[in-house]
Amino acid sequence: MDQEEKMKGFFSILLLFLLPQGLFSANIQALKPEFAAVVSEDARLVEIARDLQFTEGPVWVESKGKGFLLFSDIPADKIYRWAQGEGLSVWRTPSGNSNGLLLDSQGRLLACEHGGRRVSLTLDSGEVVTLCDRFKGGRLNSPNDVALGADGSLWFTDPPYGLSKQEESEQPASYVFRLARETKEPAAVVDNFDRPNGIVFSPDKKVLYISESGKPHHIRYFRVAGKSLEEIGVFATISPGGPDGMCMDVMGRLYSTAGDGVHVFSTDGILIGKILTPNNPTNCCFGGKEWKTLFITARPDVYAVKLNVKGLP
Image 1 (tube, helix red, strand yellow):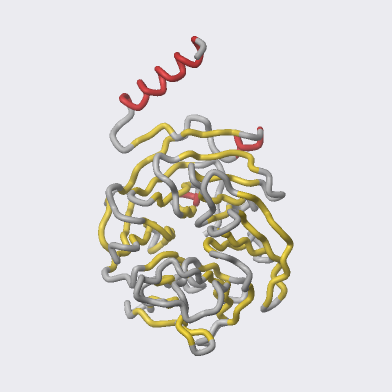
Image 2 (spheres, rainbow, N blue to C red):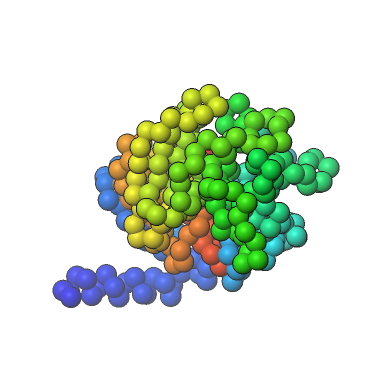
C-alpha cells in the first residue's frame, strides 16, 4: 500500500468518528463522468431506522403538504412510518407480512402481502380490502412488488419467497401479472422468470423493467403493448449479488439494489455509478423535498441520501 492510499484510509476512519451518530460518508463510486449529475461526491448517507428485521418496499407519501415514508418489515408483520423531525413509528400491524408498497392513482396504499398471498388496497376509511389473491383457481404465491400502469392497471411479480415450509405453491410458474382496473383476477403477462422481483416503469410508462433475483441475476425490459408485453432483452446484469427492488429518476436512469449498494444505470443500460451501503439493500424509492432524496431499505436498517436529481413517485 502506497503513502497516498494509507492517508486516504486514515482520513476515512477519522471522518467516521467525526460524523454524528447515524450519519455515514456515502461511498460514492463514479464509474462514468455523468454520475456527477446524479449525486455529489460528499453526499452523506443518513441512517433513519436501525435494528429492525427485514425492511422492504419503501414508498413516499405526500399528505396535506407534509411528506412521510412508509416501509415494510416483513417478518415483524409491520409497516413503519418515518417523517423528518418525528422519527419512526408503527403505522400498521399486522400488515399481512407486506413487502412492496405503492400508491395507486388516488394516493391510496397498495401492498403486496406475503402472509395474505394477495395484493391489498387501503381505502380512505382505513379498511384493507383484497384486490386479487387467486389466478385460475389457485392462490397466488406471495406477491412481491408492484408498479402502476398508465391506464391504472397494476403489474406485479409473484415469486414464492413468502411461502412458509408448510405451504405449497399453487401456481405452475412464478408469473408477472397484470391486474386491470375493476377486475378480481389478474392476467399472466410473463411466465419465464425464475424469481421475478422488482418492477418499475419508465417515465413515459412505455417500458417495463423487471429484476430477476433468481438465476441469472439480471434485469430484463419489455415494451408495453396494451395489455401485454414485448420483450426487448436484458437491460443489465447485476454483480455482486442480485437485483431486488428498483426505482427510476425523471431522466429515465434506473436505480437497482445489488449486493453492495444501489447501482445506477443510464437509459442504455450502462452502469454509471454506485451508492454503496453498510448493509445489503433490498429496495429503494425517491421522496423528500422536491423528490430528490433516495430512500434505501437494507435488511435491518433504512438509509436516506440526498441526490442532485429528481425521482419518479
